[in-house]
Image (cartoon, rainbow over all chains, first blue to last red; front, side, top):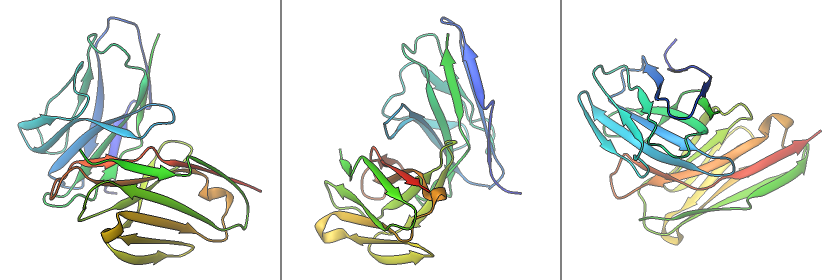
Length: 112
Length: 110
């Protein structure tokens, strides 16, 4: 089955710790995205990548980092510099040249 | 940047009722998408609709690009329609980045 997987589904972190969220897709899509969603809010773009080994900051990149070493994978690291990391994180992908995005199931991060 | 506003923010219906959700955007766009987020957080594409009208079962969408709005119609609502409905438009012409509205939270009661 083709699709986007995110892991883990739930993640708990202590203050001051870095944590990495996984996003994998087998759709052969070129572009991948990370969004943050807070309660009652829409999605805000953190980072996106249109091609392997290249990525751009979105609207709220501070305190986050990404890598794109493989087409299928786009992990997101939430660093200790992110002041309010508790949120729902969604990964998406799209075919190059289109803006129709397909979403993974999300990771809910809670900082204790 | 482009602004996207959705109304109403919350909507409560009895099963079987019809509803209309609205999405206004502040600048010209060449695309608009509607998504449904289920209570477990999964987002599903409903429509890719830059202009005109599309229908898929009990759902239909209309975008009037010249007047900068789109409408999502849900007929004969079911409890499984509950969740949050988002519209999204490209950040700028030809961009693959999307700007999302804050959504309409729909609750359908049995």
